[in-house]
Length: 332
Image 1 (cartoon, helix red, strand yellow):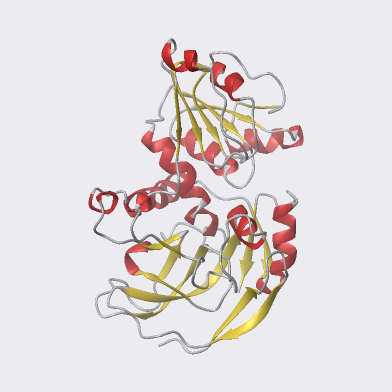
Image 2 (cartoon, rainbow, N blue to C red):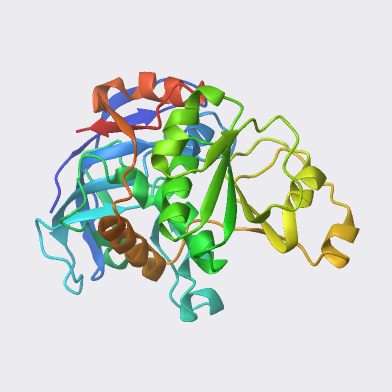
């Protein structure tokens, strides 16, 4: 059983995270495990949480891109103590709703458990989750840089797989940041031709090194009828009709972030050109396992910089201000 937990906790919205000691958790359920984080990267969702954008309760201990070792296990948990695992945004589900019984546990509407909402997340010495939402890290992945795959990697892999991206398809990735730099790599390794879009053209060499044919200015005119899929990895408002025009007939625009206002779209694009607008959040446990295997086999690697966990407030500030390249990993 895990004893007292050291964590970086926020007492008030937009306040600093401070190191605290939390009481020992209650007894493990049969399917639960306690994970001791070794590395936890900073996702922009953590910034939304600490900035109060999503109305999470305080005290708040963020962190949900976790690589760590199983420290304790319930009687029916299928992971041995000491196993190196990854934990992402989701820590459990109800197991009984339509989503859960059809392999879409990430869409659970009855009992989805979020790793760092209502419980301490990865900026701590221990994290609890359902063992079915913890995933062994393949031996060919570097554990020091794998943490971003647990949320960012899953978030981009899931729609690319669901939309059938493959050889000969043309994919546009809007935003070359924590999500976008992984989306470029994954789409390229799926066989697609990839064009990245970002307002910072200083990232052009990086985009090409990751597998993009080119990096274009996201503020400029989008190419017309040249893409089969546009994956929007940013949460900023865009000229949605212009991006729909960038799609070829039957193409798909997929949102991964929450825009600040409702989308304004010309319905003729959807009718006469049979284009689609969809969205995607994380992915199921089965998709997570496929994503980790794909990245291990195909050489998809997050671009990270490391900081000690004690520098968590500086790391959050850098992510908030767009100064991370591309993900910051906090080392316990």
